[in-house]
Length: 511
View 1 (spheres, rainbow, N blue to C red):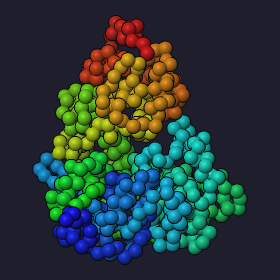
View 2 (cartoon, rainbow, N blue to C red):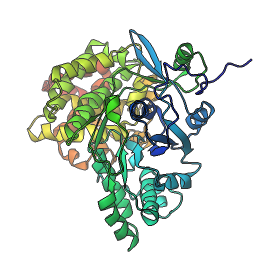
View 3 (cartoon, rainbow, N blue to C red):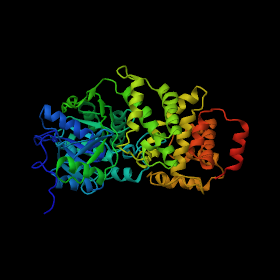
């Protein structure tokens, strides 16, 4: 007899956060990944448990049907495994009412966004999913996917195309108000999403373009938000933990740290769940929270991942346990990121930093360096340029920001003959082929780094004019290649290496 799978008939009552089936579907969520299922879905279940309402979530997977199929086989349920060194706790949100796979049925996604029952459209598609040009910060009109969606009314495939076409259908049918809520790690994510959608709509022919933009002015909001929870990739290990706690089979359990945070603007013209019952914070100014998270947490996290991977460390806890990685993380956080943010008055900076290192040291969670380091071409574009330009504008070359870029390049586009190790090779990045070609064709390390800034499509090309910054990154690439990441991190603590060292490095290391 086969083991029963998770369902509303057999889930332990103590584990099910929202015991009743949602009263209706009021939210369409784009991006049915682990983060959404361990974050927004949990907040929504807690909200409906306290204040029932039509706030069930239609989860839309981008391409793969794996999670959607498994959820459909399990009454749309799954376990969230909260992991800490003290032990594990499993809860079951129960906030979803259906699933779609956009790649298979894009027309249904547009209709769902346009449905009058839909009050909120939420998004977690990662930074890469917004099809932004890194050079201009605008919608990437040169992207094949964007160009296709501009000519395709009924079956758009990009996130921005889906939203724009859904809003167009909504405006032309019932014109009910709606909120578009980005939950991705983009600075001013609501404003960025609104601008990208408006740029897409701006390509429409009049009068559709003008009528739609006018309706959006009065009926569509794009609140800024900040989300925070470390959610590693799932595995059979977590499925087994969920089974042990729930007593039934769960094939898509989601691991997560105990910590969770959600801050957003109160701009929901069609209403919202009572997310504050899950601990969400509403404020008029999200930006300080965004900058604090994207730079202090995410920016430092990237450096830990790249240094750790280059040092042969599989996980973030293993990486930050290395004294040179911890020291570099503290220096970039305190010396280079912290001066570029205004920490919200409600946050104790010292406590926040202590909490970050405690989270990164959660050995039970085992967040992999290859996961954190993936898609760096998009992530670092959000984390490096503005802080770097602030320091450069004050006449200082930011050593650890330079080291971050160098370690990233060594992981994703290692110089010919240099092996960055299995964890770096496991990182995925859409820019890898392009950057690897630049590394192969460059005559020197400095030429390679300069070409990354000029032609790489990662950072604003204005950074290439800061030759000291470019040269320092090249120095760190050479040091990593010849001596390893620990020596490079040590070198970063000395912002003015002696001339003999620089000359030796540049004369003996070429790509």
